[in-house]
Length: 179
Ligand SMILES: O=P(O)(O)OC[C@H]1O[C@H](OP(=O)(O)OP(=O)(O)O)[C@H](O)[C@@H]1O
Ligand SMILES: [Mg+2]
Image (tube, rainbow, N blue to C red; front, side, top):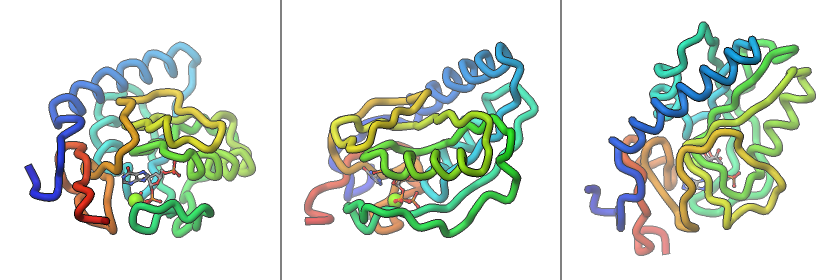
């Protein structure tokens, strides 16, 4: 375990199993409604989860990425900045947004609004983690891997000041690292 991790919340094996389960459910749901989703990953946090999840979706999906940022250290700055927009047209597409975590919900709410403004037919969300205690916005993910307690987590895409994204598990960051 990394020296800055207080506790492992979700192991790499649990994430692996969850991605199989979520991929199966997403395949079934989209097959049933006859839609091919455009998977949109939010950079940078969604990268490890998206790469694991997409391998378990058995349809001819397309993928794209957006880069939006809202966090400085452990603090949500309240407004989001777009650093990279979609390369594909969102018009009339069934979009499945891929997130590492839904925390306050601000990022998700803004991105959902942007995609709706671009004419997306549907915007659903799959998130590896959900931290409902911190929610300030009325927004939910349609598919959730793990619901976690209100602690700052790192690993499997999640960072603290751009560090720890490569850890193969999700862990709680030791308070002494940021206090
Ligand atoms: O629900 P919220 O309170 O909006 O927080 C969740 C968002 O914040 C983090 O992204 P961040 O802006 O830190 O960018 P990153 O993915 O590059 O780390 C995380 O990856 C989510 O996208
Ligand atoms: Mg971040």
